[in-house]
Length: 492
Image 1: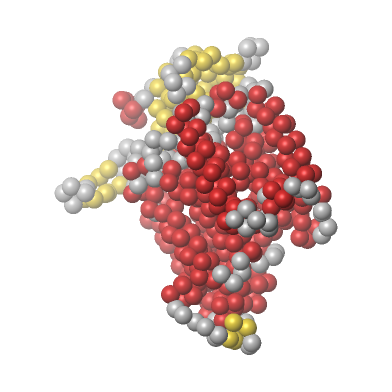
Image 2: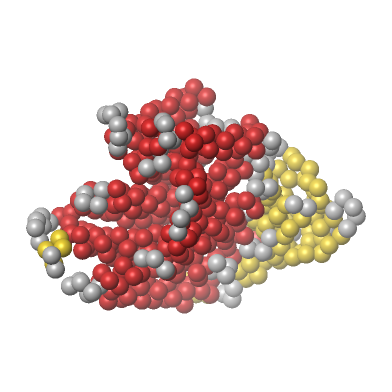
């Protein structure tokens, strides 16, 4: 170890060292307080950070550490540690990832690797067909991660409670501190739209009863007053926030004591000054994922199906149709009583794209299982080892599946911003989604540097798929998500 050229051993050693440093900081300092790096400290840190990355790239020709830091040998261990910390912290209910020093330290190391790789690719830009999709993905990820993390210090989320006929300009934060806003809201009328009464089966008795008062939408008719005396009438409801003086006002809840006759509306008031920069990274990621999903790997999938495993394409299409059928069936069965947050144009594309993603990952994992559990030596098809045929198709399936996962996940982030005011809050389901995304990314990077390590690649793929199942439905049974996750709701 530590003899040039460095490989995975040094990468994992650095990961262990950074994890130990993070644990030590967590013990000595406690959780991270992001308020200490609020504006203008965060912008100063961003400038210093970018200068250091440029200097590191400039020194990479002379310093082996920096040159190695732009390789897959550094990237794969960093992805592994970020994924494992996300999995471990996703099982815990009392700790946010961005307040955890061990996660933030290894996450910063991984982000720095991405940043140096982006600088290298920009300097050595050669072919737009290859370099543009690469930069859209990696530079988009770098921009989104860095600005979302530093911008977290300036992010404000407050709650305002307004009664009918009253003017309110104060809101409270999570520590119950009162903040005065640069505008006031007068609640003129609050209504709850309801579904028609339906017959449901009681769990306790098994009897069918008529259930009423199933909420369909919460609607607040308000008048917004600004300091310059302008009054504007508006309507606020779930998935339809209101813009006011640089803030967004979301319909959060209502006074539960009076049910449908409540005259109190609860708003969530959000200010996120870094949002436009974060969105730049997000949309770059979406464009890059589209390139990888629909233009690059499908040729490999089609070529792979010409081999003797032609059933793969038919099996894949069957699973896609089955997944979409299940989704449509659930919509028919539950569509009349979908909770307000799910009534969004983002719902269908978010879910359908994920169904395609899950199907591709499922087929890829199924193809890799025989390599993991059977001993196949010297088997060839057309002069090429069978394992090489299998993984050639598997890699393309995972590449397309990961691209679709990226699109679906980012669509979910954009939807969450419109529904709840935050695009990524490290909710337990979001934490598991990030862990799953990083694990499949680990698989692809590992395959690029170790293409003949088929069993280890299969293990990574199977573990990633297991985490995908946890992200899909297992999260509903985790104690860390109960009463905390906005994704664990009951749809009647």
